[in-house]
Length: 147
Image 1 (cartoon, rainbow, N blue to C red):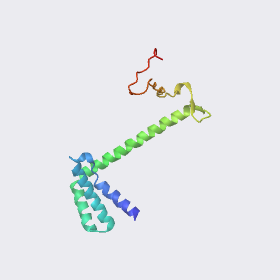
Image 2 (cartoon, rainbow, N blue to C red):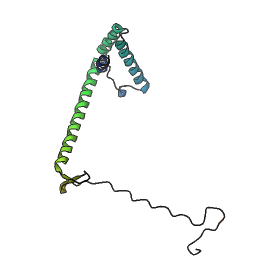
Image 3 (tube, rainbow, N blue to C red):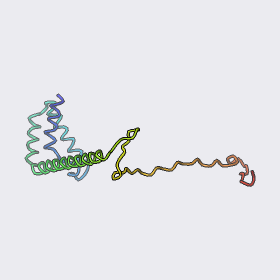
Image 4 (cartoon, rainbow, N blue to C red):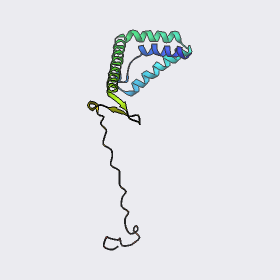
């Protein structure tokens, strides 16, 4: 059952593929998402399947240009993410190639051309001095001379 639902969701999401940026307000986008979810649930549960399929075909015909544009944008976004992942993997491999050995604690020891830089550490906070002479009970505070 789960595979069938996933298949239906994938098919419908390739047709009803608008994003939030395609709407003038969040309410319109949420109404769109609710309509899509109603269609998916009707088909999954076997309710009004013929009517839902008719509605899908009608929407598909009326929005074929935006559907194609959104599918192209989705493919472009996926290609960009894949290219970025490849570039990161390449950078990691290059750095791994520069690691000569590992220290006893497991940290990499790198050559001179690949020094690791670290953010400066926060200096340890010193404890605040304790005020001399109680705390507001009418006592006269002690001074360095009055000790």
